[in-house]
Length: 285
Picture 1 (cartoon, helix red, strand yellow):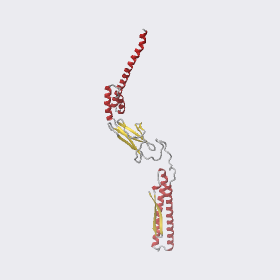
Picture 2 (cartoon, rainbow, N blue to C red):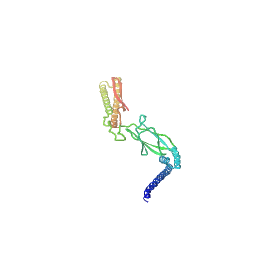
Picture 3 (cartoon, helix red, strand yellow):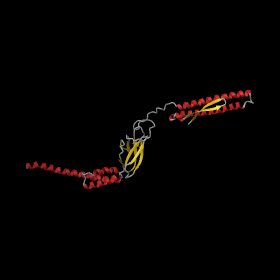
Picture 4 (cartoon, rainbow, N blue to C red):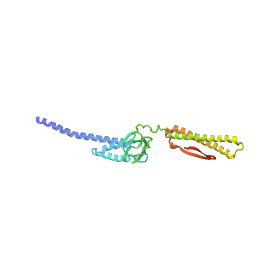
């Protein structure tokens, strides 16, 4: 009896060792069967990427041959209809970008572009591209079943001003407080033109008084024409001066919106008259 009791533990251990592999095989078989069932459900729902993952599980060598065979066949079918896209991005000068974060429907799929295709389920997806120093770009794309290596590329617009990485706060515009030089120059030219018009007009009026006091009404026609010409010139130059002052006001009010001094062109005006020339100034916009 003592010898039999000594043999009994060995018999129990051997029995347990024989049961454990069978339990493991049974659990493995259940995992394979469950994966194949889930793969079929996901495929029917259009979730091809998830179906591919489950088919990779049930297609292993550890699975029963029948399940393994079916999953391998289904895997070929899923891969044939699973769409794929190749994301790309360029800067404002048309150069390819590499350091770009790409998200699909809010899920980051890559932190850098390498030209490789990414599997995507068929349907409508929102692609978001992000890179340093530029506004993020979103693109809504309809991905079709069976569509392979579709290129989804965007072009980042040039930044209006430098920005912190990944959409940080915008620094203050350095030119916001700059004086409106164009407004000052244009206004000064307008004042000079008005001064010249006043000078010509006063001279013409003085000569007209002299004629009235000396020879009127039998003055020489050339002298009369000269005075009338100077009145006309004074009026034209005064009009140019007024226009320049109005333009100066506009430039002063709009200089913070990006008005540039080059927006106006200074055009000198020289008009011959009987006793010399009259100078004026005009501005073209």
